[in-house]
Length: 295
Length: 295
Image (cartoon, rainbow over all chains, first blue to last red):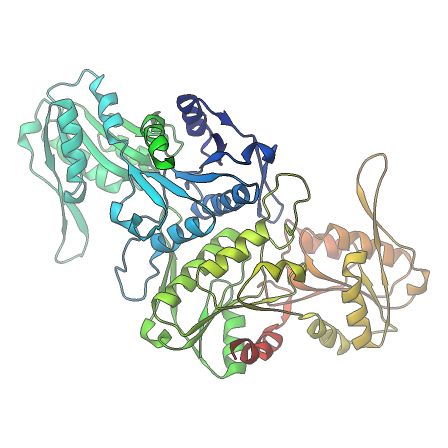
């Protein structure tokens, strides 16, 4: 077994290698002056006859990372890998999982099809937006959850009678999971559309949070607007500290500052995306499923 | 028959539609805040049972354009197109057509494979770097040359005893073709590697160009360094005017200024890439092969 680390995925890849006790292949990556990606495996003979795990997250610069993933998968096959396992800790385009309007491209389906066509024999991702999206893959596939790791991390904090919240009903299951690990209560905010302005608002009435710690959890944070609104509401009800826990921290256009300014005291995320808040490694949950996906 | 225009490809797509006397589908494109592409076909029912021509060039931002191409090809299939023809006027990654060093990804092969996997039934490109690269495609494919159109454009100029040059031996065939159309002489520069510094130099001795017009032609210009050197040499031998003609003008990092500063009087290119020097449309040579590739 050998691990091939992709761009923005090296720390996670190295942790995986440590857990799986396997070698990491050196990879050269560069950009040509016109912006084309260049990827080269050092010593490609090491790939021959091996189970090859390609670790490539897809943020930032989703399209560039996806293209590098496709190139590496195809190259691993060319170099006669026995099995090629694509580990995509954060999978971009997963929110485009249906045609919300007529005529839309079904991006996540198209991309999974290309991962398969590039030569992946198996596919692992972490907290994909909707697990059903993986149904289109014919190869072996697994979606693992790193949310329990976020809960375990928070459990070590000195939490005061914590309550767990999801920013909307869709993420309620995450709130329930984290609450269970913490032995805490949980609840959900709701999203409502203003009948006049069309604006989407986050609403919830939680007087019970007064003087207690609040934890908001979701699979990912992008611009942070919803989380900021939820934090404001919790603070207005007298929450002591507000924690925000995510698997994937995209942190787009000032999301971190927006959350902090709205009353979030600490943001916690995993290393499926490399960020300043990636304090929890998703490597253990990925490493755990690798033996079974290869057998 | 219906044409679907991709990003940075609309002017060419509209010219193609005019020549082929067919409709152009409206397409909505946007970027999500995190940078993911969104593509939507207006009225996808128009695609059903039709020969659908997707026109998507792949510069600038090669990976973004390729991803949009994959999404559109897959969507056209989903919307029950009869045949899907991928027209990629400029195909990125075509220079990575072999493993120059052990372990390199064979990018152009990987990408052509993905175009096929996305649902293209036929593939058309213009002046691909090496035509042999297309051999990996199982679908019908054609590489057309827009170089004669560059020659025809230059023929209308009041050229003084023109001589045509290629910047290296690899592009000599282009110089020969253009010279034939102009009824002119042609010659090639050579690239030599300095034994001490390792630097690649463009060399050539052309005293015959004194007082005459010189035309340098190549399939593409990227940073413009080679062309700038060739122009300097031609000017030093007393060339009257120096023209530079390309199919694909990538014009990376100040290439245009570099060429002008080195003595190039006019840069001419086609619209396979949208640039300020794209004065020649490649649409006629593409339109010409479409009926045969569909039959």
